Amino acid sequence: MKSPQRLPLLLVAILAAAITFAFIRQPAPPEAPAPPLVSLEKMGHLVSLKMNYADVIEFTQPNAVDIPWSQWEVRLGSTRVLLVARGDCTVATDLRQARYDDVDARARTMTVVLPPPAPLQARISHEARNRGGSYFYAVTDQGLQAFIPSAQTRTNAMNNALATAQKAVQAACKQPGVLDAAKENAAAVLQATLGATGWTPNVIWEARASASP
Image (cartoon, rainbow, N blue to C red; front, top):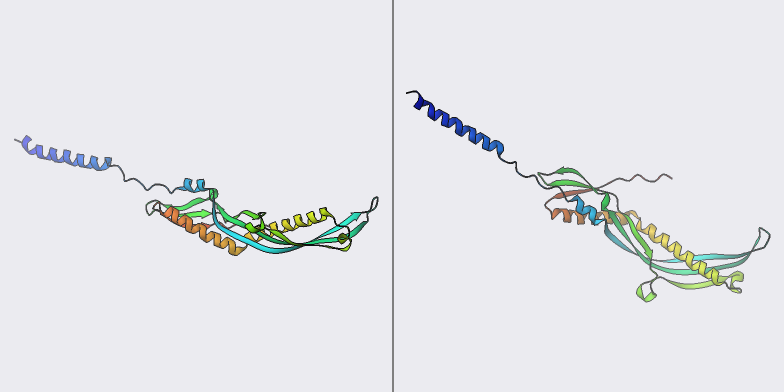
């Protein structure tokens, strides 16, 4: 007579054990995928700013002839050139050095740490004048150079003027205002790109120590 009373208790115990086992074996919800760092690396350099450059550069090339078997020279004057320099430069961020910090997979937020943008390419245009290229406005000789012209002196003057212009466009590309604009543009691009994947990025820039004198 006692066996029928034990049967319901046994069924209840089996049912409770089955429910407990089912909860234990239930797979955990999948975690949010990691942010697409590989995609940033594959982008390489992100060009975020292009600056056009134009300036007028005056350059004077001295000319002299060495006196054989002595330390003296005869100055023949100089050649002055006027260069209308035109060119451009691009500023880019190297995304191969990007890294993630403070990644919250549940909230899908993260911090993207980037190296500061830097000039990627600075050039003086050698296209024809009517295509926006650089050109020389005037060439004048002074002293004996005016009476004994030297093609090499004029060539050196023009080449040195172009080299001066190249350094000038490189310096213009490193101005703080230019680099700040490049940062703003790069941050906007990355926020839009990563935001499209469902993540909310916060872009910060690494501080680079200034070079010692």
